[in-house]
Length: 118
Image 1 (cartoon, one colour):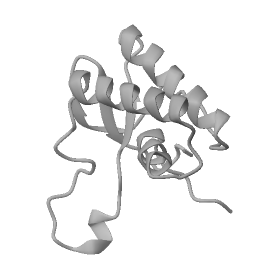
Image 2: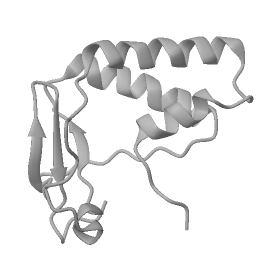
Image 3: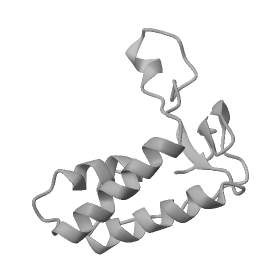
Image 4: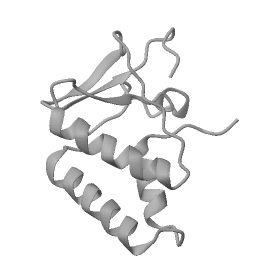
C-alpha cells in the first residue's frame, strides 16, 4: 500500500526530480511561490503539547475553506500538474473534519475524528 501525503509534500518532492521538463518546472515554481506568498504555514499540525512521541504522531489534515476560491483554483492547477507527472491525487471532502487545531481566512487544520477515514 502506498503512503499518502499532502499535495504540497508531493509538489516539493517533484520539484527535486530530474524528470521535470523546463516548462513544468517553471509552472511548479510559480505555483509554489504563489502559495508561499498567499497561504500561511500553520504553527502546529496536532493538538498535543506532549513530548511523548506516541501522542505527537497524530497529524492534522489541512483543508481549504470553500470560500478560498483563488486558493482552490491554484490548488487544482497544482493537482493537475502533479497528476500529469504521475502523482495520484485524491480530492477529500468532509462535513466533519475533526478537532480544529488552526484556522485562518483560507484554511483549517484539523486532527481527524477516529471515525474519519482519510
